[in-house]
Amino acid sequence: MASESPQQGGIRLKVRVNGEHHESVVDPRMNLADYLREELRLTATHVGCEHGVCGICNVLVDGQAVRSCLMLAVQVDGKEVRTVEGLAEGGKLHPIQEAFIEEHGLQCGFCTGGFMMALCELFDRNPSPSEAEIKEVVGGQICRCTGYNAILRSAQNAAAKMSASRS
Amino acid sequence: MKPAPFEYVAPSTISGVLEILGQNDPDEVKLMAGGQSLMPLLNMRLSRPALVIDLGKVADLDFIRETDEGVVIGAMTSKRAVEDSELILREHPLLWESTVAIGHPPIRNRGTVGGSMAQADPASEYPAVALVLGAELVAVSARGERTIPADDFFVTFLTTCLEPDEVLTEIRIPRLAPRSGWAFQEVARRHGDFAIVGATATLRLEAGVVVDPRIAVFGVADRALRFSAAESLLTGQAASDEMIDEVASQAAAAVEDPLEDAHASADYRRHLAGVLVGRVLREAAVRAAEASTGA
Image 1 (cartoon, rainbow over the protein chains, first blue to last red):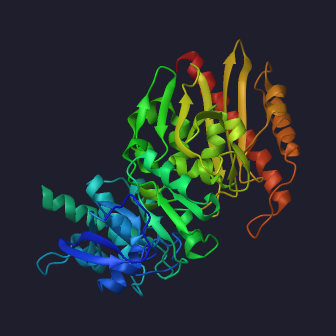
Image 2 (cartoon, rainbow over the protein chains, first blue to last red; image 1 turned 90 degrees about the vertical axis):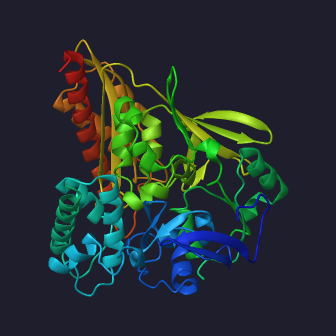
């Protein structure tokens, strides 16, 4: 809970993650990525560089993509967090996930969640992004396998799927 | 867990922040804005504060307002809000252009305008932009409020003239003079990375000569630098290729102690500073000429 006086040790945190309500007591120094992985056991959020460069730990906080390694868990108190686990609904993959499978947008898969969450925010903001807008978002994460072309194709395929399902 | 242990507080008002600041040894306290620079420093234990005061809940510091003189931006306004602002795009396209050069969308969602100013990273875009736009930075403490011109604000590496008990609250950016030309360019290894060197300039053209040129670079020295001697040299001259080349080489020569690191040597940074100053002056002159002819 937000407090008006300094607190050490456990701080109480209430947060919705992928629609589910959680209450935890966390150390103020615990970052959001570690909270999701270690406390909630939501291990689809991977951690790469752990200082904001690689983008692999991206999650959505109140709809905005953020580096979960650069946010404290206590900072999501009262907020809504969406992780890779929250993309699929009712056992059906999200169009972004389907597009990555169809276009072979991954090899080892370690970075994939970071790309998908960044793209998820893009499509929420802008349902039909230009190629330049897609590149700007894809450029925010590091992938060491694909060479990015397959990821760009996945993003374009996902955009097409999502606009087809709306019309 | 990576950071060393710290106590944490997130006051919802500036007076709450100042009160807690007053009750603690300022050397033991870190103010957290968006955390996009502070979190890595905490994670690597380069910074080990006893207390982190998170400014994220101070809603009064998150705004973009138009005034008679220009725009005022709250210190806790995110870079994404600046990027999304029609007002900024219309009134301060230079600020907009420099904003989208900062990091990547998820970094801009969290990173703040005030955070970049107060962090004063030598490779950061905003300090140089604040210099050429003639911004003023407003700080408050229990002792009162003061307004600091950008020219006096940035001192050296990660150091501003803010006192330990002061909090940056807003950035005031005067309106660009009518028919001004502007430009912003940076060189980075990868789009969104810290710039190796960047440059920015504004100027006007009146009766074929340059009026009120302002030139600044970042990533070159311990802080963003303005080149007043080069500005004087250009003032009252035609913006010819020869003149701009001369001004650019004078600016490059004026850098006292260029940075040197794994990314670039001191000589390369000095060279790049000259090249980029030349490019931004040419681009700004073209924009100023277009603005004067109403194109």
